Length: 216
Image (tube, rainbow, N blue to C red; front, side, top):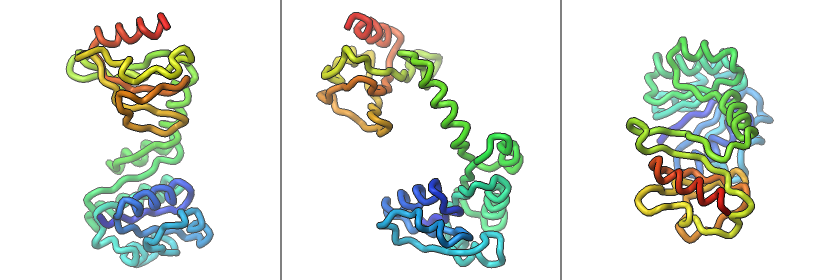
């Protein structure tokens, strides 16, 4: 996949480096040469220095062959304009823009752009974690017959196995996050205090899990 990343701050550099490591052809645009120092040492994609709105700058980055473009600068207006140009002028099939300031979100929505609001999402996520709730529903399927729950592992469950959170046929562990890094654990993986477990369960299944955690 050919991808253009507009903006090489820490956010853009991380995105470009991740895409490159996955084997994609990546071009990064930024008007400040020092910004490219944010890229990981192993990045070998294209680097294009200059104003993204200058004539032919997007062409120099290969936009006419691009499969996707991510506009992730710290300027919401620039992200919106670049995203709009990429989609309507060059017909890039997949365009995603970053919403940097929450008050500018309506601008991206007015352009009908697919957006990621890292600031709003991050603040909401931290707020939820500060509530210290043992259980939180993060997804509901059908009419609620099956839901995905987020659970923080208590200290009393140190060393217990993931399989102990899975009543037969009623609950399945989806992911385990430890120190901010998510993984797909096997049933024999052991738990640590403050691990975050996402599990898919029926109402009966989650009630059993809740009971086990309370009894521990």
